[in-house]
Length: 215
Image 1 (spheres, rainbow, N blue to C red):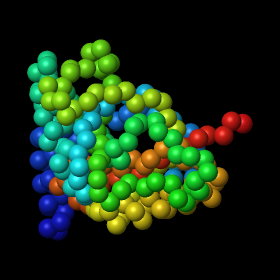
Image 2: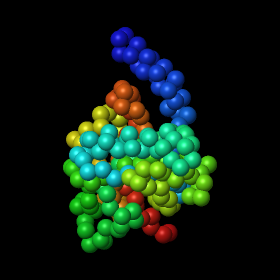
Image 3: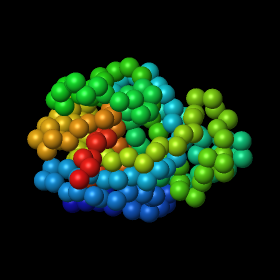
């Protein structure tokens, strides 16, 4: 009963602060294939606001969040507030679109590192374009367009620990290997809920860009 009451209280707080979770905008995508453990989505292009931090796997998002939140809260040249979206994404700090050599076995593809440099990003609402989105005042924030991609996605709930992440990352990689799907990018860790949200109710995802065979 106490847990049920706590969930109701936190839901009320979150609703007052920014609306229901289901009201948050996500990047546009279409599910093009479903399997037992994962699905493949075709994502339309979208904009992100991103920043780079040097931290551990579990601390990176916490450190970056304030920088990005300040930007959408009005720390931009237009002093314009931008609606919060989901998810908050975390990936290795490497050039977007960098491909992994085909000679590397799928089971040995790069994973999210234990610590080092990460880029964390917020998705910009779809009403904006590169021409209309407010420019950041903080030089640590970069606005960038993510191109159309085919992403293999595995979902799970629970805490945002590295151990739990690794378990599902390995599960996704093995599933892709079994299906003969080629991974062509580094993984992205997507978090859809605020930190106070009960871990068993959280929506977490791991995304890997894959090459879709031409039929």
